[in-house]
Image (tube, rainbow, N blue to C red; front, side):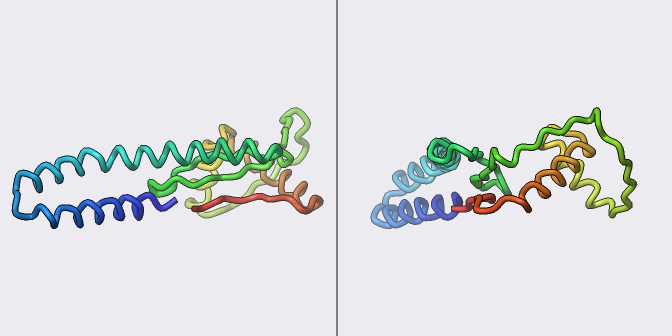
Length: 147
């Protein structure tokens, strides 16, 4: 969602109205104070709209969950497929694998695992398991909705 673009449109509309009152400094000062107060409230309201949209879309897609995720301060709707849910039991793990990778990729894996509430090992096993499962299934939607 492009919240900054919408906020800029509202600000431009306010500036257009202010041009009519340019000779009255009190009105201009009051409008600037009003805008500085409203801007964060407008951005927060759009976050609420994104949450409502996620709930509405989730209600219409029974096999999916839609979540609001902030990316660079902008909300995005992320769609997760329940059919891809992977349950991993660490009791029956048989093989061990050592992987050498760049430090930046290791940090990314740790961050992604943390966001899912998993260890790096569990995250990798879940990701590989769901990837294997998704290769065998077809006709499903998986992705991020950007508006």
